[in-house]
Amino acid sequence: MVTASAAREAVLKLVEHLADRRTLAVLVNLNPETCDEIEFAAQASRQLVVVAEAMEPDGPQGLRLLGPVDEKVKETLELVSRLGETDAKGANDAYTGNSMGATAWNNRFAALSQARLLTERKVGKTKYYSLALKGLVDGN
Image (tube, rainbow, N blue to C red; front, top):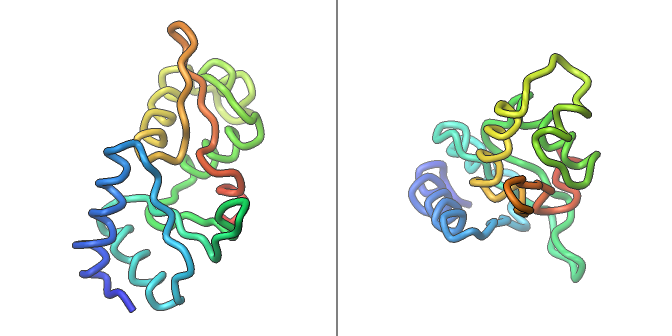
């Protein structure tokens, strides 16, 4: 088992280190106690962490996010999942809630891209975003 302090000092630092190098860390096959400790540390440090139940040949299975998964994060990931790939204008056009504008979508996308939850593809001046892992939305 990993305690919250060990998660904060080792696991979350590794996740952040890999994100800085444009790599998404996925923690796999954690026991429930360790998952709870990592969740506690992730919440306290305001850091998103991806966990999976198992690793299969076609990729991680049973994905979910730990940490500060608020409604904005959920709705952004759900919208990108539904659209497959989108830019800020496309997200704003497809969004059924209160209109936010392209700047707000760009800010959300940039934060989730920095956490490596979204991948980014640039065409001219426009950035298009898609989920880094299929199934990421299903588990939350």
